[in-house]
Length: 293
Ligand code: ATP
Ligand code: MG
Image (cartoon, rainbow, N blue to C red; front, side):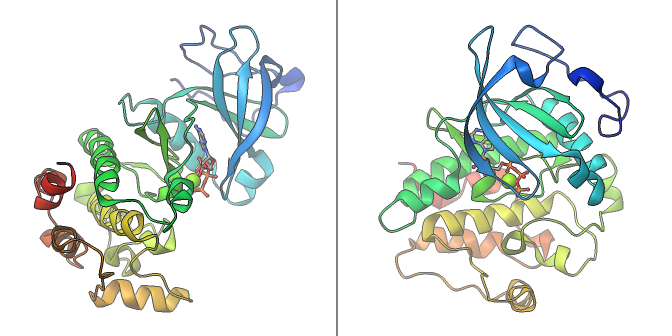
């Protein structure tokens, strides 16, 4: 997808659009092309609606962001990266983006619709507010498959959490590339930026010593813990307390966690990123062998 011009600053009288793509057979879109349904979810920066393309009847999810908000928080580059990196990521476990357009006040992303919603909501729907280990193993494995693909293509996701992992026909669709970054030079340079959701931030990010693709490996550990218990491992009342717990290296498990899960999480959630297993090693672990049996 080409991203010429500044889509946030571009004036767009008459709802003129400049999106690209796609399987909908069209490369220019406007709000009137879609019939809006209910709100599917809200994030920090956006609202997502179920929508139907009027001509084809094709169902999509429309992610809507206010230009004024993006400008106020200096998020223009971030949005540009979100569109470019998500669009460049053609993988069965990555949510597809079909196009984008804008009008006077808003920017719209046309997304693949994930009809089963996000993993956070799913986790809450279980009686004990947690997912059985065998099902969690399936979702974690598919998320890892998406991340292996991204890392091979030099992209770090940096915002893994249950709310950003969607499900369609029982399979994971990794979404929300709002914090993703191209890693071309990052492995050499190491990135200093501090970002992500507090409970998922790695020790190296808290310490601002620079971070690389291995922050996604840390987050997979946190995600796995949260899916299987309903709570992230270092959750605390305050920012400082969370940081202290993340950096302390002490990890406590609920009694019902299997031995294999405890062993795997102890290996992943290590302060020193050099000591964490890579994704291939994680998938080979005993937990996946037993949980997926
Ligand atoms: P954040 O606060 O994490 O930065 P955001 O503003 O970037 O969020 P998203 O995470 O992309 O927004 O979407 C917000 C919520 O909307 C998701 O957690 C999910 O519940 C719902 N949602 C987003 N995209 C889809 C989709 N394609 N299909 C179904 N539901 C979706
Ligand atoms: Mg989100």
